[in-house]
Image 1 (cartoon, rainbow, N blue to C red):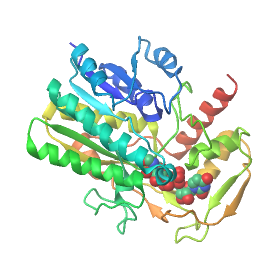
Image 2 (cartoon, protein in one colour; image 1 turned 45 degrees about the vertical axis):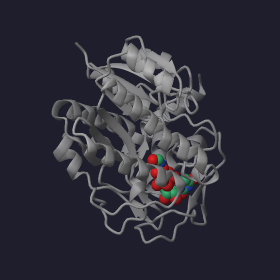
Image 3 (spheres, rainbow, N blue to C red; image 1 turned 180 degrees about the vertical axis):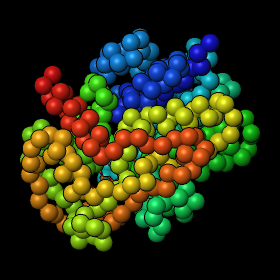
Image 4 (spheres, protein in one colour; image 1 turned 90 degrees about the horizontal axis):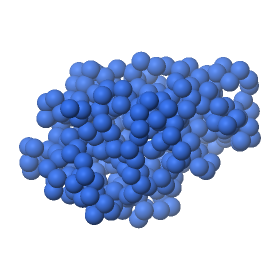
Length: 336
Ligand code: WQD
């Protein structure tokens, strides 16, 4: 009998790619999504990729009665929780939305899980909990902090899960700290599909490449990095999705919790990304140097060793793969 997963936020960027990997691994999956940051036709495209019907319920993790009905209708073995707000800049403008959706949403979900006696959960965390790290590559033992409401919600959620796990050993949590997700599925049928002007580097460059945006502004070229521009640990979304499957596998197999970085351990600069994208798109991309962005740090990349030891996870795709898959996705999307 296939094990069954509730995938909250499963119509979103990382959630939809994780759906594909879960289906490939033989899991039965139910998606819950309110489509606040996802296109409704993504489920049709997931059916094409997976070759099976997709079960998707439209709704919000804050809706406790809906969650109770979901857990009554389905015998879930575990939950993978993506449903949250994730834009750093927006979180400073709408802190209450972030506190409610990200923190109260998790608590509502945990309450429904406890009632249904489902105790395994993979949580989508972020390297943002490291704040401005003073150790590189960043190990999981680095001190946690926050410098924006989004980062605060991820930190509070991690600490809340630690409290709950300590209270009852039936709980098993996989806390996954992503660095910088990038790229798209090999079929170019799913990928990052922001509704408005993107804050993040790769989707912004992608829109410059398709002509939807005029030029890239490089936020600062005077950092203490090899070429003066910001360095980050970009990880292919397909590697990230596979890491989620390995996390839920481990929870169900061992019942033990884990907190791991999901990164490559390699840092790439803004210019590295720009040049790789130009190669993928086969054209020069207009750009200009601009002042530093408030809140940015010079360089962040993760220590991938613990994820390899605990989950057997290792990123396999490089920056060229991320840029080529992104270009294939956005150029296909623009022409459909
Ligand atoms: C990367 C680099 C910018 C845009 C954020 C969140 C983090 C996670 C990933 C959710 C930096 C530079 C960017 C642009 C630029 N999100 N840049 N021009 O800030 O590392 O991380 O997204 O979990 O929590 O903090 O990602 O893609 O915004 O920036 O020069 O138009 O690209 O200065 O050096 P970041 P990013």
